[in-house]
Image (cartoon, rainbow, N blue to C red):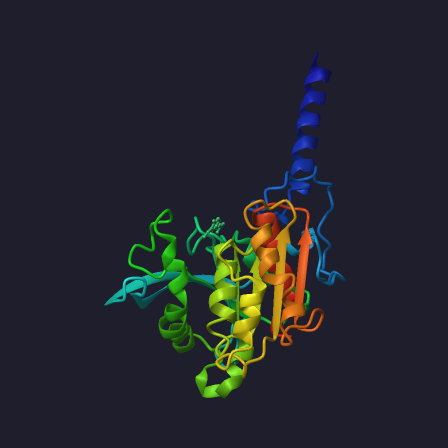
Length: 333
Ligand code: FER
């Protein structure tokens, strides 16, 4: 009996030791936003001195798990801002403030100048939809890792609220305000970012557009195409449209606008498109906006400044984070 008790104590002690020794560090925790059930963890003790892992990102159909891990020690930071704007939908000049989130890369240094990506949400979302709000952000994990492994130069990401009207906080409100975001971006958000962070501005001349990008999911993909590319090409050079929504301009209209006198002087540095093949909300519109664009516009050349990508997936974040991961590797290069 006593031997049995001793054995039990020893077993319990052994179990506790094993549990402590194999406890996953916070850095190895996968973000929950992608929500894949985690595999059974295999115990692998941390090396005494961290050796640089020889990994390289590539344009992929799946995000390697190493790029999804949170980086605690050498990660960037996220801050919430509030900027002054107007109700552009109702042409109401009254000033009000709107929130947005800003990702700053690790070792953000105000004496350097950074590129900026404006990252837009979908129809039911707001400035929080990309989850870029704190330490457990997948966008932050992807950025931190792409920077850590030397795949990209650090850049700033801004996640605003894409509804340009007073009732912006109502996520089930009027979606017409999404189409008015261009004025807010040009007149209010960009000037705010440019006066509060170390980024390229109009003072840098026309090349400032080479340092600005826009990307978005669904309605935000529509905004990237209709507003970023077809209205603000003088300000922005790089575009990423993920599952672009049904009101995205069709390729013929985009080609016509790119050929117009207003937009002709400005190069599309790159347009990256991704959509899930099983996306029954946006496949038709995303494909109609992008797939024939290289054939219709002499300003868009597949493989040079354009990519259409489709892969298995639906209208959800498994596609949108993949889109972000791929676009982050293309933009500003
Ligand atoms: C529509 C269906 C879906 C539409 C927009 C959406 C404006 C947007 C979906 C999303 O942002 O996820 O008919 O028209």
